[in-house]
Amino acid sequence: MGLQRAVPFYFEVLRSLAAGDKNQKSQECYRMTRMNGGQALVRSLAAEGLRVVFGVPGAGQYEAIDALFTTPSIRYISVRHEQAASYMADGYARACGGVAAALVVEGPGLFNAMSGIATAYATSSPILVVTGDHHHRKKGLELDETAWLGPLTKWVARVERPAEIPEAVREAFGQLRSGRPRPVAIEVPPSVFAASEEVGPAQQPAAGPAPADGDERAIQRAVELLTGAQRPVIWAGGGVMRAKAATLVAELADYLQIPVVTTKQGKGSISERHPLSLGMAEMNYRPLRDWLAARDLILVVGSSRVAGGIGQQIIKIDVDGNELAQGENVLPVQGDAGSVLKALNRAVAAATSARTETADAVQAEVASLNAARFDPSVQLQPQWDLMEAVHAALPEDGIVVQGMNQMGYYSRNYFRAGAPHTYLTSSSHGTLGCAYPVALGAKVAYPQRAVVSLSGDGGFLYNAQEIATAVQHGINAVAIVFNDNAYGNVLRAQMEEFDGHVLGTQLHNPDFVALAQSFGARGVLAEDAAALESALREALDEDGDKPTLIEVPLGILDREF
Image (cartoon, rainbow, N blue to C red; front, side, top):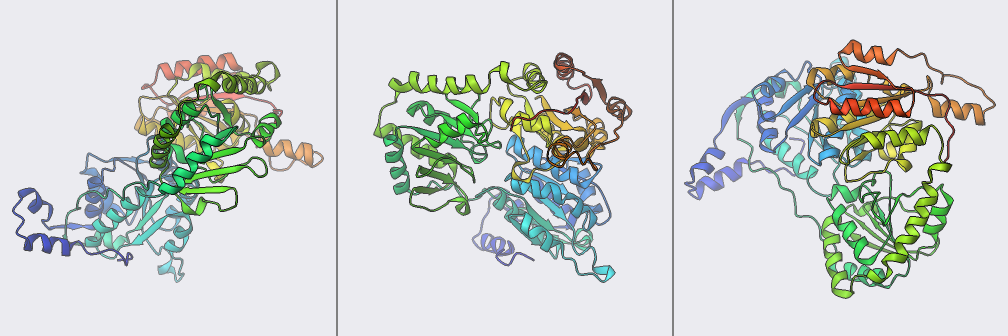
């Protein structure tokens, strides 16, 4: 097997039998069964608790598809393009924190899925990719899929026999459940899927190591710095939600009356309606940038990036040691954000009393900054009214997926995320076209919750075919398509920065309403904010009926940042 460190589970079987284990359940666990590679894969995935596989069925994986047919605990969703398979797996994983799988054929199928795998890598999303290998070998070309997957995954392995599959799956889930979550991949050649042999059943699901608690001395030093700071701020990133630590961030903020800013991927780490929330750390908004520069300490939790002033003390908590910068004014604390914050909060409570006496002054300062930043009378139009329409129609636990378009960018600052995992982005990857399939994946994770994607006309057409997937599988997410008949951000740049040299940015589009209806979805035209709110409310009220596309016509929009 491609995993050199993997120990064949047969030795565990022999040791158990030699010990005279009479437990009937254990004997059942160790029974060998003849099966093909597809059956071995699906049985192992089911044993790990996997609930959904996205993919396009194709040659080289027939046995796996057949095994899924006979495994009701795993839902198989056939999509219309492999990039949607990886995007939907990513959306599912980030919405609920569980693992989803993408099953794609080798060669073009895998390469089609690469943009979604790369996006999942950027967003630290735990997805499993299962594919074949060496698609080009029969044509005399040695293009090894493992080499392509390596930079975009946390771990990759190749199996040579059906009997090796259970151990590979166990290791894959161990990787997915430990440390920083990122995609993992298993290559199963078509010949291995088809071959049959005696295969030991999947063993106990891989639990992964216990979360790292962080160095006690570093945590104690962090307590000293936090309690001694006069003007601290918490900088919360996406790692807060991956560690299920949002409640702990709010507890610390409330106890010491520390204001909180987030990254765009960290939106929802604390409700943006919380009296200590300053929303996303928009460094192009000068009053907030100046305020951050005046802080004497920044506690960074689960974020690779932080910005502030010169000489500030920084405490950086991250499970990924590669993200822990060193420096004279940096205290690194490596560990799971949840475990570290639990220890930190306990130590802070033991060291000092709650700072209720500063609450009024600190919260008044936050309220003043927010009042100026979010004053409706100074906002861009129609962007502000359109975003307020989304707010008015969306429930508190509704999920918004930000696309790479003008309204998507605007939402980073002006959509007020109320809870963890309710605002999904493509993070540093900036993936145009992923918003709708990511939203479909999130809706599969939470079919009873409202899920809305914010797409532009250009980006939406990257995956418009997935309306068919949504209709066929009853995935009733709502796609809002802001249509300016252009790649709007690039068009504006051409006009403003390149003397109006417009090339390639003006688009000929379909009738989006009719397009949705042709797939069997609901299509609605909303020409202003009031109509958008009404259409969105109706779509969400009738959830369970059919997917909805709401087209919002726009002209060229001004930008703030």
